[in-house]
Length: 226
Length: 218
Image (cartoon, rainbow over all chains, first blue to last red; front, side, top):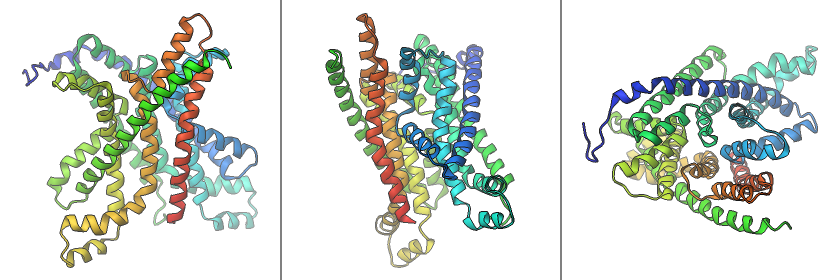
């Protein structure tokens, strides 16, 4: 049916391009999942080092966190893709995709985990030490499980952002979902069909991830605890 | 100083001016619209809240670059002639206002219930309760996350380069291209490094301000 501007919405157009969108989605999921897993790992490890106040390492981590949190992800992507080849580091789109997401999400998660670990009451760790636990053992058995639970909501938020921000790779023409859709729009002008399709895919996956995050939070909630 | 530095620096400065204007427009529009939508989200009537909820879920849930592209492609189709700057303001502000709305809703609902009830008992209307009792108290709690959102918005303005706005990032890209075409080195490391540094110098103080204010609240 034509609307006021004479636009004819053709649902068949989406069906016709499902194959292309599917391969775009697979690339989106590939770079997102590596980026999310990496951001989680970097966050826990560096967050732990940071909260244990290990000298020098802790300051280097602060520099990493502040640089990545206070500059735009898109400029970081451009730096990895366009600038690093000048100093002999040539990465392809796929590598820049997961690496930039990992570094960006990791920086935010370091802060999230550090804050979580530091929010664990000092008395617990002191009690552990009094019972003869070594410092690493006290961290492993008390600070980590409690602090990670405190950090969980903000960490899952960042992981969802990592997934959404995988769409930034359209800027370096890596053929993930957004890039695929934008290229189809550029030659067909089927704006509403394509954006409806990818909008539903992104919103649906974000919604599923939030549901999953909520389930994980409930599963690990301490009964009657904070 | 190498001869390429001068022209590139002044080109980046023009881009930075565009970035600053875009950031100002987006921050103002997002705060204004977001406070309005966020206030609606605290209304008792579910029917009134529903459209605001849909607005927030859509524009917060979608990747920001998709909103930007969508607006950029759709405006001409529905007959609105807006330049790239206007499209960027609209796209970024849809995303920004949805996020501000969530912060405002959370902050208003964190004000103890008795405050609103007492104001209602004193005869304040809803607008009076919001204007004189709830929003001023909520503002203090909302400030640190709002500053964080402003930092985020400033950074997201760089996405306007993708739809062709000549901001600082696009200026850097064009400089790199020009230097490469003229046969020499692209100088991409110092040029993109400078862009990163500019954003860092603008955003770090704001991030620190937000953190300082957050600590002061507790």
